[in-house]
Amino acid sequence: MDTEKLLAILRLQKCKGIGDILAKKLIVNVGDIRQIFTEKQSNLLKINGIGSHVLNTLLDPLNITLAEKEYKYITENNISYSYFLDENYPKNLQQCLDSSILLFKDGNLDFSNQKTISIVGTRNISSYGRTFCNQLVKDLAIYNPIIVSGFAYGVDICAHKAAIDNNLQTIAVLAHGFNQIYPKVHKKYIHKVNENGGFLTEFWHDEAPLRENFLKRNRIVAGISKATIVIESAAKGGSLVTADIADSYHRDVFAVPGRTTDIYSKGCNNLIKYNKAHILNSAEDIVKMLNWDLTEKPKQIQQQLFIDLNSNEQKIFDLLHQKGAQLLDVISFECHIPIYQLSGLLLQMELKGITKPLPGKMFELV
Image (tube, rainbow, N blue to C red):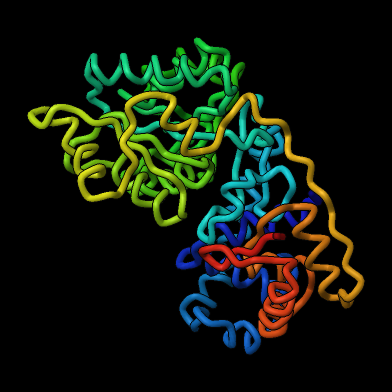
C-alpha cells in the first residue's frame, strides 16, 4: 500500500464521530479513500450521516498530524496491517458491516483457515471451566481450528494456552495498542502466542486499555470467527456481549451448562434457557453444528457457464467467485456500480439462479 493511501486511512480512522460504518459509506460514495479529503463539501454533505459537525471533524488538520505520527510508528516498527478491502483482511470479519477499516497485526497470523472459533468467558474461571476448556481444545485439535480470544484473565488465557499446548494457531485480540500489554502479567505468554499465531488490534500504538475499548474489541472477537463459545459467565459480563454480537452477525453461539447454584454458570445457563446459544457438552457438538467432518471429501466446485451475463453482471460474478460472499456496499465499491443500479442487477442474477442474498446485506454465488 502506498504512503498516501495509508495516511488517508489513518486520518479517516482518527476522525471523531466517524465510525467504521460511516467511514465505509464515505469510501463507497467517493470511490477512493484518498479523495475523501479533497472532495467538494457540498458532495460530502449529500451523504447520509454527514452533517456540518462531522464534516468539521473530517477536515480537522490535527488528524493529519496524528496520522503522520502513527504512520512513523508503523514504518519504524515494521507493523503489519490489513485494510478492510484487502485480500489479507480476515474474511469472516470482512462480512461484518461494522468491522474496523484497518487492523494492526503482529506474529504469524494466517486467516485462510475457515475453522475459526472464539472462546470467551469469565475472568474468574473455575476448575470446572478450566478442565472443560482444556479438554475441548484438545478434542478439537484434530480439526486444526484457529482459537481466538481476548488475552484477558480467566477463560481467555486458558483458551490461548490450550491452543499452544495442542500446536494450534491462536489469535489474541487486544483492546489497546501494541506498545503495551494488558494484563501485564501475561507478558510471559507473548512469545508463545506469536509463535503459534499472533495479536490483532484496531487501536493505535499508544491507545490505553480503556473500558470502552474492551467493548469494541468484542465485536472483532465475534466477527472473526464462525462460532463463539462461552465457557463460563456470570449473569452479566463482557462474554455475554460478545455472544450477543456473534448472534447479530448470524454466527453460531455455544454455551457450556453449569450447576444452577454456580454464579459463573448463570450467564451460560440463561443463554441456553432463552435459546440464545446451543448447549455445549463436548467437542462433538461443535463438529456436528459447524459441519466439520474429517471423512468428508473436499467438495468439487463446478463452475457453471453463463451465456447471458452482461458486463456489469460479469463483474459481480467475477468478484463473488474470487472473494466469496460480500457486502452490498463492498460489491458497489469494487465493481464501480451505484447501489441503486446494483440492487436491480443482483435481483436479476438471483432470478437467474446465480446469486443469493444473505442476512446483513450480504450476497454470494449459488
